[in-house]
Amino acid sequence: MYNFFVDGVQFPVAPAELSTKINGRNETIVLMNEGEVNIIKKTGLTDIEFEVLLPNVKYPFSVYPNGFQPATYYLEKLEKLKVDDKPFQFIVNRMMPNGNLLFDTNMTVSIEEYEILESAENGFDVNVRIKLKQYKAYGNKKINLKAATKASSSTSAAKTATKAVVEQKRPTTGKETPKTHTVKDGETLWAIAKKYLGDGSKYTELAKINNISNPSVIKAGQVIKLG
Image (cartoon, rainbow, N blue to C red; front, side, top):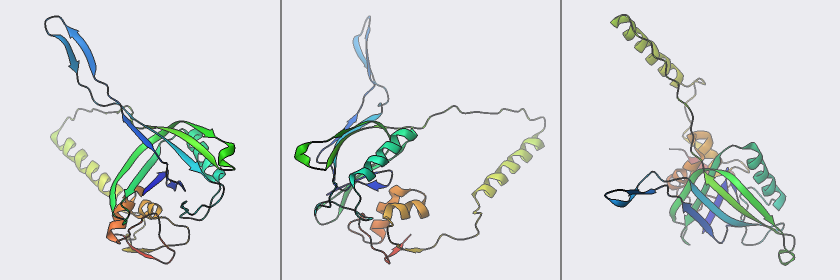
C-alpha cells in the first residue's frame, strides 16, 4: 500500500508507478600519461516522475482522509504549487498489507512541469503526469569580521551573543507543549506533527508512538500522544 502526499495533501489514488532518478555529476577526462579517468563528484538533484488518477466520483479504492474532493481540488493545488515558485514536501509512505510501515520517501521538491490528460475511456476522471525535482536551499553567507582591541571586549561580546541566542530560544508563549492532542474533524496526522513537532514528516513517529497502523486514517475524538 502506497500513500502519496504533496505539501500535506494526499492523492486519493496512489500512482501505479513511481520513477526516482538520482542524477550523477561525475566527469570523465583524459590525462596524458594515465589515459581516461573518472572524477567522482557529488550527486546531482533527484528527478521524480509519476502519473496520478484524479477521480470525479468516489471509488471504493480511493482514499479521502478529509472527505471526498473532486479532481478540480487537486488540480488547483498543483497550479498553486507551480505558480508560487516555492519548494514543498513530497512524501511517499509504503506499507505492508498488515499495515506495518516499510520505508518513506520524504524530499523537498519543486514542480518542474505537469500535464493534464483527459480521455473518453476515463469518463469524467482526469490523469495528471507530474515531474518533480529535488530542491536544495542555497544562498550567500554574510560574515562580519571585527578586530577586538582588548581581550575583555571579545569576552563581553561572546557573552552578549550567547545571551541573545538563549533568549531567542526561550518560548514566548510561556506554555509548555502538551503531551496529547485530541483529533478534530478534518485533521491529519501530518498536520498534527507539523503543529506540535515543527515538521509534518514526523507523522510516522506519532504513528509508531500511538500504534497507528495506517497514518492516513485517524478519527475525530481520537487522543494522540505527542511524545
